[in-house]
Amino acid sequence: MDDLSERPGTDDEDRIPGRYANSFAVGYNAFEFILDFGQSYSETGTSQVHTRIITNPRDAEALLETLKESLGQYEQKFGAIRKNG
Image 1 (cartoon, rainbow, N blue to C red):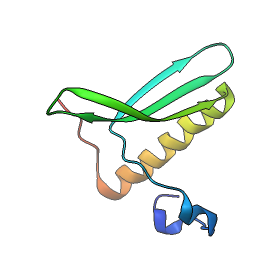
Image 2 (cartoon, rainbow, N blue to C red):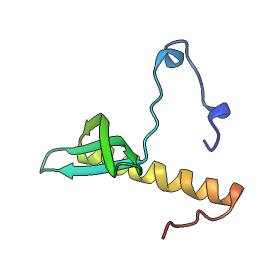
Image 3 (cartoon, rainbow, N blue to C red):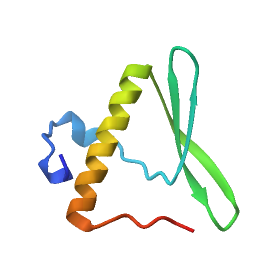
Image 4 (cartoon, helix red, strand yellow):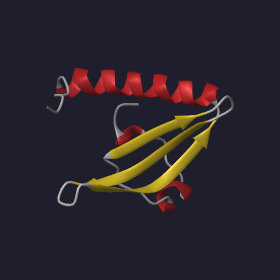
């Protein structure tokens, strides 16, 4: 799905809070991946983690494939994403 308006919705989904993240960190061991999401503040040079997702390697790989597919669809619709720097 390339558009939030195309997602199937439920009443429960409306109660899930959304959080903005522009800072990410990934850790792993033999059994799990740890994904930290946070917000980076350029004024102070600090970042604060607000969400941690822990998942197994198989589902981490599925997430990677979903992101690749979604980014490809995004770029087809809106053009290439420019890299910072």
